[in-house]
Length: 170
Image (cartoon, rainbow, N blue to C red; front, top):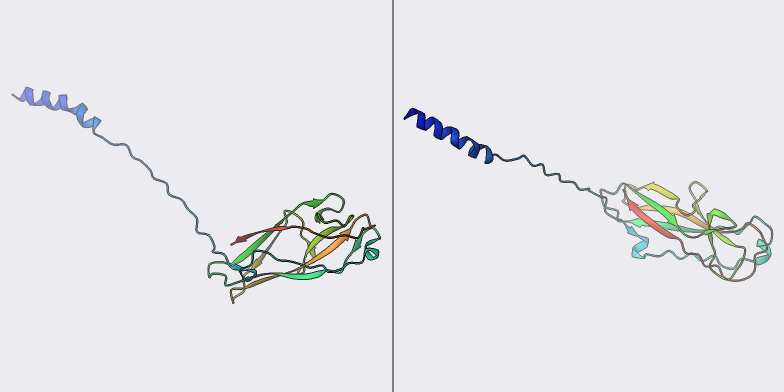
C-alpha cells in the first residue's frame, strides 16, 4: 500500500508544476504638468500697429524703424506654474536673415524684427524666452516690433507679418 500512495504522489507532481504562475510587471507612467495662465486677457491674438513709416526713412541699407512696444501678458497663473516659455515661429526673411520675419504685405525690401525689451535680443523663428511667474501669479514680457531693411530702397505699401507664439507652462 505504501508503494501505491508514493506512486500516486509522483504521478501528480507534473500537475502541480503546470499550475504555477509567471510573475507579471505592470508599468504605469504619467506626467503632472503646469496649468496654463490666462494669456492677453483671454484673447488669443496680439495686434501690433506699426503706424505710418516714411519710405524715405527706410531708403538706406540697414535702416531700422522706431521700435513699437507691446506686451505678452499672463494673469491668474495657477500655483504650480513657475515659469512660461514662449517660442516664436514664422517665415524668415531670405534677405534680412533668420532673425527677421518676411513681410507678406505689398511693401518691398522690408522685414520685421521682434525684440525682447529686457535683453535687447531679437527673437527670430525658433527662438524662445523663459521668464518666471511673479508672486502675484502674473507675468509680463515686454517686447518691441521693429521694421528692418537689409537692402534699403523700401517701397511704399503694407506690412503684414504673422508670427505664431507657442506657450509652454513650466
